[in-house]
Image (tube, rainbow over all chains, first blue to last red; front, side, top):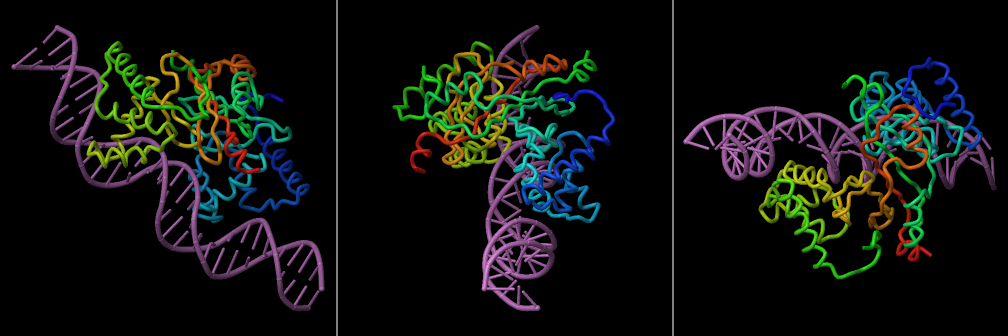
Length: 159
Length: 159
DNA sequence: GCCAAGATGTAATAACATATCAATGCGAGG
DNA sequence: CCTCGCATTGATATGTTATTACATCTTGGC
């Protein structure tokens, strides 16, 4: 499985796979994979990029699923909590997890121009930060790693 | 110089030093260290914690320096741009740089309970993320590293 | 003194997120 | 079957963070 996604590929298969994986995972853990939650995940998988909550909400509203902010935020909270979706802090946006089957610490490459997002992995207590935390007795629970720069396409177009 | 700051210390000296360092740096680079910019940096140094833009704005407003959002956002943009202040994405907040004399990639330890922030350092193209970026031709310009967890005080208080 | 670039003043609005409370559906235990 | 408890949903309102737009003023180089 590619960890990085700055390339085109046929996509409908991934969507179906990811959705059914999410479904089984929810069944396994006795979680309710409700229509709103399912649809939000599906939208993120379809678009395959980082989307703002209100952008998703617009789609839900057009489909009559719900038009108030809490609808989408509740769905996103659920999906993030269970690892189906990640939040990109840098963009205040959300993106479907690229490899939901593995337990992992996500790291992102975010293009500052086109906003494309690729997901990689990292360690929880990597290098210097882990050392610094250990020294002071800080207990790390979660880590946000987001690199900002230019994706190959935008770097090329700029020249 | 300590890279981590979960401890008390006499502070007025650091403030004066940091301000005059900022001043010289601006002079050197022919930047305007205007009253609003100076005061925002000073506020962040005084409080010595992450502050929201509107929290800073309240202080500016009370002092008659300005009461509209752009006042504080412009000052913060300037300070962030030139490395005097860092933005904590996870908190949508800002904090004075702990070691403005060095060129560095900041990394933060953020307590999820008391919101205390400590600054450490990291590398721009560390480990796996750098490799992933290299493989795909992504050009990293900036990197955000923020660890969330419990600081020693909060971890202790909880027990 | 004049011009261009940078900085500020001000109003309005956009974008992102949460609080609250009532109503509904659904499974477990009686 | 009933009903208790709990997760989810619906709906309204509000809170928080950030940007756009445009007029005006200041500063520094020529």
